[in-house]
Image (cartoon, rainbow, N blue to C red; front, side, top):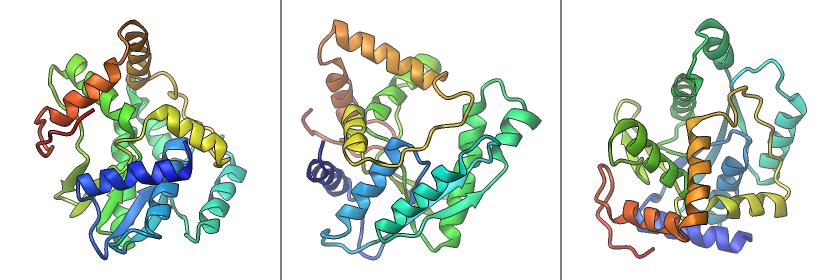
Length: 246
């Protein structure tokens, strides 16, 4: 996938769900992974020609892993600087809290909660009224499956959500972008993807859903497209009604 295709899909999502209004100051969550870096490229490219001017503020929450690579963070800072942006790094001790102090058997939930709290707080401090997450189309489908299988609910996070407590609007502009296209884009653009130091990486329920979807698609061609269509048209909680095609 090239940049033009990425911008086209991002703009479609932004327009379909009215994610951006004039004067928005949007904090983009940057983990250093392929998804968040692609999101940054997409929003940075979009702001150059989108008819409603907005500001972009990249924020990275440093989880505090002892074996993190300092050079990788510097490469990330250089990358954002080359885009004309300043990367704001939030130092934290989240890794110590989750893995050492609490010794969580299911660390992802607490880690996500603490990471989001730190990110949202810094976004407010920097005067942002919106935050952007890098969830792509496959994430929506996997979340839908996890809700169904583990919670017994037909549910999925929405493209746009309002966080009452923080008074922030959360947007997910990569909703129409597929993960394989993000992988291809990251490689083609030589994005400075950071290795995830988390010991739970690759051993989560979401990874289980990825494998399940892969097997389903091999047996039933096009099942992911049909699931995504069901999400779009399913009148789920927090979602606008839609008659969008697959």
